Length: 317
Length: 257
Ligand code: HEM
Image (tube, rainbow over all chains, first blue to last red; front, side):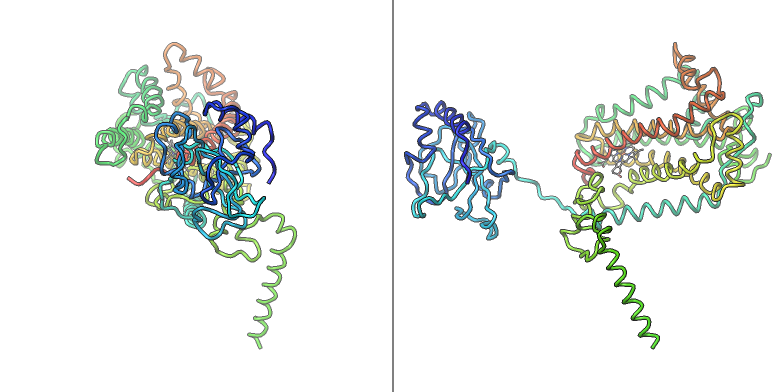
């Protein structure tokens, strides 16, 4: 194990000394293990400090043990220190902590409660907390340290590791197969469509020969339809820009109802359906039921005046 | 006898296949866990690697919620919108080889596509119907998102991004509409941009900005062309990137109802 740089040790010692109200030198000495103070009850040894940023290991991983360990938070102190404290049972009898910080330590060999049998080789990581520095464990050969300080982990981070179990599946193959299928299906559809249906190409553009009727592309035909009822200042501007853009963008901010269950959102669903049905009706009307001069026409009587599908259908001119 | 020959042929083919897949070139291309790699086994680890060790990781997480995979939830509409966009890009690039955005050439070039270019007519049809399908699928995608309430926190912003995507999709389609330079194109765009001209106070200016002239003209054709093949695709790709990224960051596809 590499040594913790002196400067870091010192900084954490100062912080701890301040919190405990004892001289820095004493804390330092304790930290270096020169003055064993607490009874070494059992193997797990905890390095403790208020802020020990030691980092010999690249990634501190909070393991299951840490969750277990942090399940008994100390009420007042921990909150004050903004670092929750919790103790493994072995330390329960020790003095109450004054400023506790959760530290992740590495245990090469011995663990208080090994969660599984795998880790000893590459080292298990655990976040453990103790109120006081503890001397190297008894019952072990001299010079053997059982734990290494990895990093300081904010208690909150430890306490909130409980992830909700979710039912997940591998993207490959479960999602990607479905996507590939959809992709091939739409390609096939488009190929067949394009082989069968000819895209329109009318006479060359002629600014002097206005066709009758002149229609916008179909997705604007609903608007054009509206335009034929209202003053252009209303239908041409207010409707598309205000309702269309701003209104649509505002939907999530206007609809504050948090529920996504259809039975709880009858009004929203009704409104949207009404809006979409209205737009669809206007569009279909504009596409099929508007003839010369954009006047009403029955498609089965007067023909369809929609050149996008000119070559699909038989026209009665 | 025949069986022996066939067996040997199959064996040889396998050997060759193994040699090719195990070659240094393939090794260098395929990252660990690729299903195309020699000796791929269908293990949970490799299933993760397929995504994780792959450019796909930019789009998909390794695991997704089980219900999100059900086709009946998203109907794959967002994915299809994206895929149609890809198809449109591919067919569009093909069309660009044969099209000149000038008053004299545009119409003739489109006409020539169906008479003197191999697959020209098919590709043009794919581009055109694909564009209609994309508008449709984006609308349907939006509706499915609405009916699922999938725009609710934390997904509000992605809905806003979506509205921008819808707008860009319409703009892409509209700007492409003019390019064949036939009567349909010319007058549809005239009618459409007249609507834009109804903006209060600065309607004329807005229309002029859009058309690059007072009415649809050669300058409009060039403007629409550049917007259609460069500007709008560029912008929509950026917004799509944000959109997909947010889908993941907002916790994947929203939960079941
Ligand atoms: C070019 C257009 C668009 C593309 C390519 C696209 C693509 C996607 C994709 C691939 C997803 C993942 C889930 C799914 O497939 O349904 C998604 C989700 C989403 N999209 Fe879009 N989208 C587009 C337009 C829109 C529009 C117009 C809106 C709304 C106005 C929108 C809002 C959303 C929202 C809120 C989600 C999250 C849904 C959820 O979590 O269930 N998108 N989009």
